[in-house]
Image (cartoon, rainbow, N blue to C red; front, side):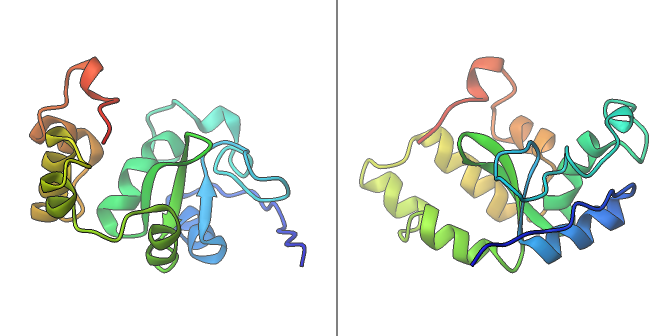
Amino acid sequence: MKLELEQEMIHTYEEATQLIQRVGILPLATIIPSHPSLGSVTDPNQWHTSSELDPRLWRARFPGDGTAAYGKILKKKVVLVSRDWYPHVLKVHGHIDKPDTRYKNGLLSKAALDVYQCIENNEGIDTRELRGRAGMKAKEMKSTRE
């Protein structure tokens, strides 16, 4: 079954949330053939304008309002995953053990555990605030992984 999605242009955050809900997975860049990305459905002139129509700023809002999870899960590229699709993506891509169990078994770093705990205690936290609270403000800490 080939999935062809019409690439309509979007202009607002609300339109972007509707698109994420409809397609389930929305990469920021075009990495899935014949599938929309935030970059392919928005006006390039709106990026980096710091206005409410700037798609770059929307990416931090999606997790905060529960619209979508945000992370590098495909080809090490940023992808938005809808609330409905998230449990399925987690099962395919994630781990079944809880973070504290993985940490105790030596499968998760202390820095990664701190991030998990911070998210758990601050549902919907903005990614910039998360980095600050989890002690990951330094550039070298941004890429700390499991």
